[in-house]
Length: 352
Image (tube, rainbow, N blue to C red):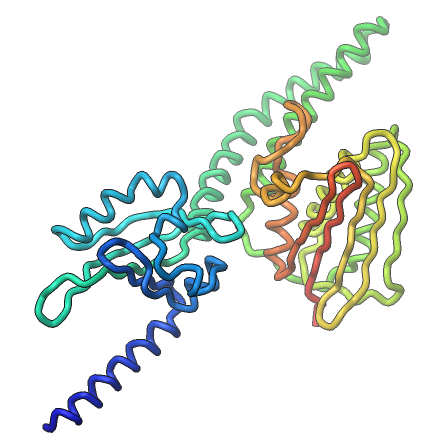
C-alpha cells in the first residue's frame, strides 16, 4: 500500500473519530500533560455553558467545585502515573454558577511510540440518579415518620379536643388551641415530606385547570383569612384541559399560592393569569410580596431551602410544586425583585 493511501486512510480514521466524539451525549475532554484543555465536545460545551474559545488553554480547575478540587491531586497522580486512570464522582460548576454531579473516568493518552502526550476525561451527568436515590431515602423516612409520629399525634389531638370541650377557662382554651395548631403543623411537615418524596408516575388525565386554580385560591384564602390580599384572576374562557393528575396538580398550585400569600406582609395583591399558547397552557402567578434576592433565586426550588424564619416553613413547598409540574412534562420559571414581588411562570402540556 502506498504512503499516500496510508495517509488518506489515517485522515479518514481521524475524521471518523472526531465525528464520533462530536456526536456522543457524554461529556468528553482532552487535556495536555499540564491539565490544560485542548478539546471539549459539543455535549460538554452545552452542559457547561462555555464556548470552546473560553475553555482552550485553561485547566480543569475552572469547572471544579470546592469539594472536587480536593480530589484533583489524586486524579492527576493516578492518571499521569500508575494505574494511568482514575474513576469517581465529581461535582462540576457551570458558567452560570450552578452545579451538577457527574461520574468521571480519565486515562492517559500515548502516541504510537508509547510517549505520554495528554489525558482524556469522559463524564456522564448522574444528577437525576443521585436525586432518585435521595428521594428513595426520603420516601422511606417519610413512611416511617407517618407511622411512628402520626399515630401518637392522633391520640394527642383527641385528648386536646376532649379537654377543650370540658374546660371553661379562657386562658386554658387558648393554650389548648395553640397545642392543636402545633399538632397540625407537625402533620403538615410529614405530609410535605411525603409529597416531596413521591416517586410514583402520575396517571395522566385531562384536568380542568380553571377549576383547580379557583379551588386552590379559595382554600388558601380561607387559611390566610386575616391578610387583606386583593386577588385578580384572568383565565382564558375556553382554556384547554391540561395533561396532569388532578390531585397532584392541586397540591402544586396550593403550595405556589401559599408561598405567594406568605411573602405578602399584611396587604397586597396576587394576580393569576392563564392562557393557551401552541401546545401548552401558560400560567403566570404574580405577587406584591417581599421578593427574593438574586443569590437565593437560583436555589428556591431546592428541597429544604427556605428564607423564612425558623418555625415558619420547611422549604419543601416550592420543591414539591416544581417536581410535580416537571413530572407532567411542564416547566416552572421564576423572576423576582426584592421589595417589589415575584412572578412565577408555569407551563403545562395541553391534553390531546
